[in-house]
Image 1 (cartoon, rainbow, N blue to C red):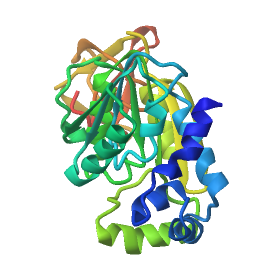
Image 2: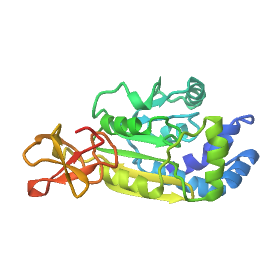
Image 3: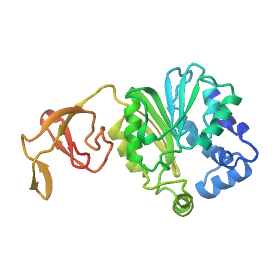
Image 4: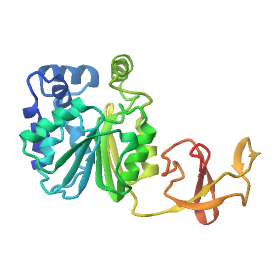
Amino acid sequence: MERKEAIRGAYRMTGGNSFYDGMITCSTLSGKAVCRLVWAMNKAENDAYLEKALSGIPEHFSGKLLEVPVGTGILTMPVYQTMPEADITCLDYSPDMMRQARKKADRLHLKNVTFRQGDVGALSYADDTFDIVLSLNGFHAFPDKEAAYREVFRVLRPGGTFCGCFYVMGEHKRTDWFVRHIYEKAGFFTPPYETVSSLKARLDGMYTDVDMGNLKSMAWFICRKAKEEAMICQRKQPSFRKKNEQDVPRQGDLQAAEYRLDRRECRLCARMGGEHLLLPQGRYGHYDRCGL
């Protein structure tokens, strides 16, 4: 209940002239108008998908958490107030957004939150650093989404949680129109975008215990990085021959190396669209676009 109230009460930190915060929390008159017009949501629906996304953070969490992007901090600073033992790093590419988030943290006297400017596609942290990576309303804006998926996976420790929410296309025609004609042109959103099905396939390929859903055009997800499970991925460069109009490696022309992967998607490079060769004992090797 404490977490739920923190989310619902985020509007109390919204400044009277802050259009962005009012829109994100669906709490001001102008914010409610945008939520209704663009996203076809009321405040209860807006709160519902945010609560789902944030439910990946346990109550009384005391580990290491990376939030990227932090934005203005309107959604998460009140939540971090309930986690005094956690070690929280908030990263954003925009110094203006971070400045607003830092002000909110200062107002709440948060001592366990560190702010860093940086690029999600090139994180400066070591592998397996964080217990949780949280990303609210970020992936639809990231210019290099493939790099972002790879970096989030890399810095998340085995057994750690990746959770968040973002826009998915194809769920509401009016929302898609606003994204394409208004938000993209303003530089707020950057294509390409996931669909519900493509996001499900991606997360299932990279993570375990995937819990995911969507409320109209907003998808939320909670998933976990597998605990040091490894499968055999082949390091090509083998010769190729045509077979049934598809390129496949020649038998015995592969060198084995251990990488985390799934038959749908290479977990090292987080790219879809390649082929997977069935190896002995039911193992799969990924070749084609990932370059392995």
